[in-house]
Amino acid sequence: MKKIKSSWFTPTRVVLGVLVVAAAAWGVKKAFFTPPPRPDVITANVVVGDLEDTVLASGTIKSFKDVSVGAQVSGQIKRLHVALGDTVKQGQLVAEIDSTTQQNAYQNAQAQIALLQAQLLAKQATLTQAELSFKRKKSLLAQDAGSAVDFEDAQAALATAKADISVLDAQIKQAKTSLDTARVNLDYTRITAPIDGVVVAVLAEEGRTVNANQSAPTIIKLSKLDTVQIKAQISEADVVRVKPGLPVYFTILGEPNQRYEAQLKSIEPVPDAAQTDTTTSTSATSTSATAIYYNGLFQVPNPDGKLRVSMTAQVFVVLNKAKDALLIPSTALSDKAVKGRYTVRVLEGEGREQKVVPHQVRIGMNNRVQAQVLEGLKAGDKVVVGEASAGGSSGGGRRGGPMF
Image 1: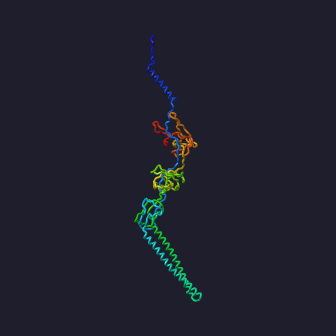
Image 2: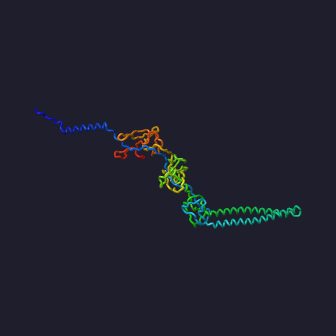
Image 3: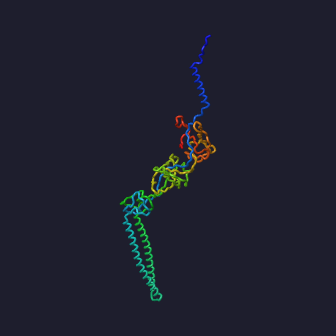
């Protein structure tokens, strides 16, 4: 009997069977033995550092004190002794006005006093003569050797002489007052610096005639610049949190890394006049959308003159600060706090074993950029601040915040 061959175990069917078994094995491994993929997130380390809660304001550097130096007498400016930018000391001569008129008035006052003093000497001699005549007539009348009329005449002459001397004494006092006024006016022709400062403006030149009778003409302007004042514009939203006595610091554009520290002295009770004028409306019922700013004032020493008038200052008013605190980006916090605590997602594990685990943390200071962790994390932990897309760029979810 002839044996019949089976066609089931053909090479093609064997290859297909091997592939099916391999695919099934791969599927089982994928489903039960492959670890989950590594989380694709953006993280930031918990670090130790200093944290400040500050109010930011734009400031302008002003001179600590300004004085307009003017002329108190009229006349031609004979000489200027200073120039723009010069540093002067209190009492230093800065300008001279032609003193011919004032000198003549002073000499006339001296001559008037001399004249009155000469007249006084003559009246004193007359008084002496009247006193002698009065005594003689009185003695004769007592002895019945003289008439009563002669005695009365002598008595009247004596009283007149005394009155004339009193008049001359008053005139001499008046003349001395005029002499003092003339001396002061003569001194006014020599204009001196009232304070130590720097000449920031020269408003008159040699040869110009100034008239002090109609107005007080300004010749130069002095500013005290060894100390400068910073006027910081604080918005109405922040001014309620700021008070005098808080520490402040500022930087200038030329030295952004140099801090100048001081203490807030005062806050003006009303907005700047220019700002108020801008926001004023002609209608009583209309409102303005222009922001309102209140000026915060403080002073800093400027011994080397590096800080100049009208420079722009970036001012920071420090409301609170913490040193050597645990810090995380504020973007790592959950939107809402539950009983004063926030939820923070932390990346834990190594390599393929990494996973995101939620942590409950207690937060202290939070300046909307960084937050102080009081409890729940330690230095070096990796907190999640955003999600990364498959291509490696940040995708949806939370993003932003500084990368530590």
